[in-house]
Every structure is written in structure tokens, then in C-alpha cells.
Image (cartoon, rainbow, N blue to C red; front, side, top):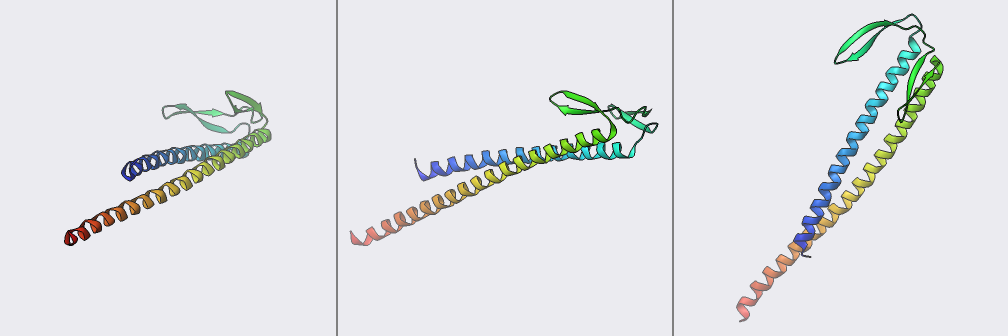
Length: 152
């Protein structure tokens, strides 16, 4: 395989790694958005009480005012299409637990990003070495051709 082909292969690998990194960074942003929503839910549960009036989103930017009948009947999604009803404090605990899991996922994805960035740095160094070798070969060939002229 010529150094030019090796450079093209390295360039393609670097591009694929960059795309993976960008996708993972998008995942981190999505998880952080989810964390923000969980924080808002925790804050609401901690400040609201039975009889409070809230705006309930219907979707499409439409809302209805509703009165909370019983703050101790909070339903929290647990994941995998499961949800459970909790009393106020337990609902907050369940949401805090959810936040911990989201933090763990952010840590996992961030470490994946770090590994890919390290791999990318390594490939970039290889590419630079190949470019230097190719330039040295060209210089030697040019120097060799010039040296032959007067001797003949």
C-alpha cells in the first residue's frame, strides 16, 4: 500500500471517528436536557401541594389549568415503559435516583468520547509521520536526479 493510500485510509478513519464523537456529544446534550427536566420536576414536587393550580401541557403548545387533587399521588416514569405512583417525598427520591442514572450515562459517554479523541490524536500523528516520509522520499528522488546529471 502506497503512503498516499495509507494517508487516504487514515483520513477516512479520522472522519468516521469525528462523526462518532459528534454523535456522542449530541447524546450528552440530550441526556443533560433530560436532567434539566428532572430537576424542574423535582422543584415542582417540592414546592407544590394539594390544591395548587398548575398548567398541564396538552401538546402542540396548548395548556389547561388544573388543580392538584393529591400531591401524594405523583406518577413517575421508571423507564422501560414502566411508571409507578409515589407519595411526594418518594417521588422526589425516585427522580433523584433517575438523575444519578443520567449522570452515570453522561460519564460513560464522556469517557467514550475521550477514548475516541485519543484514537483520533494517534491517527493524526501517524498521518503526519507518513506525510513527512513522503516528503523525504520526494526530496531524495529529486536530489538523486540532480546528482546524476553531471556525472554522465
